[in-house]
Image 1 (cartoon, rainbow, N blue to C red):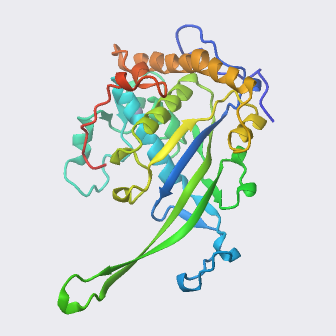
Image 2: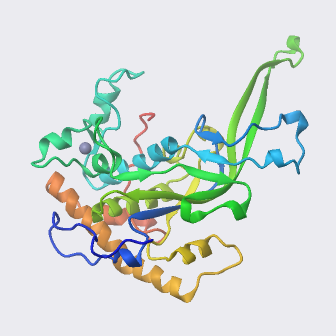
Image 3: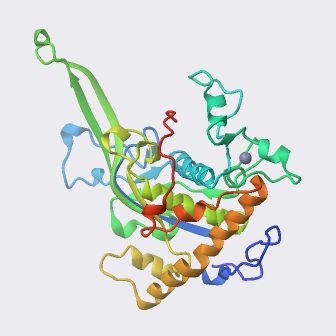
Length: 339
Ligand SMILES: [Zn+2]
């Protein structure tokens, strides 16, 4: 069921008029993020739905190998948040720091150094404003204790069996494996003895959707998601914008994009049906989204940032649309503080 138009996007807090899609003709408040990754290794961030066969009893057609499960929303959320923070910083604003100021960080001064590099102290944006709303990142991802994020981030359920994958439910086709690594001694005297055995849970060949849901429909929230997702896609092979662990090994490079919110449920399914091509109606919606609505949502983001931070350089738009703007991305690629 799609919501009635009576409750559309809230724009009263923004200056100007916005041409935004009707809820009944869009997926909002649901937002589907399309994801495609060769390999993810999100550490403990995989939950499987059963015990798995041990490696020495592996049979290719054993149903025990058809393991489904979930990729934890913790890893996904941190990754998306990092993209959102960077978009604000490129736009000349600061973002809420994700950590508590008094947390026990492993490195000295890490919090202070972050505050000098595009972050404000978590929640300080609420105290400074004249309302009880904070910066866009604070609102979307939540703040202290009782403040939930306006963005509901579901885990991604996965299955190796394509027909069991429902992309409308935020699911993906993916193959779970437990990788075993023997670290052997290089010292001749040890005769190649294993020193250590390591196992790692991974999912490979991931393709599907991640479902996000907005609790409140502010257009700047959508604008930030649009920009963050295209940023993460453009920089997907950069170490700091990969998803999950084991990034040294190329795991976590995700091709990511917003599924056109103007699509009907049928059209979204069609995107993930390899036997079907986009229809003419879908292409028309792609044009409408790109040329009209996408720009309007990004404009709302810029408007809300200028409210927050005063005069802003108009930098965000340059780092936005997918594909045609790689030359105008002015991202600062030098931040290497190991986060
Ligand atoms: Zn903030």
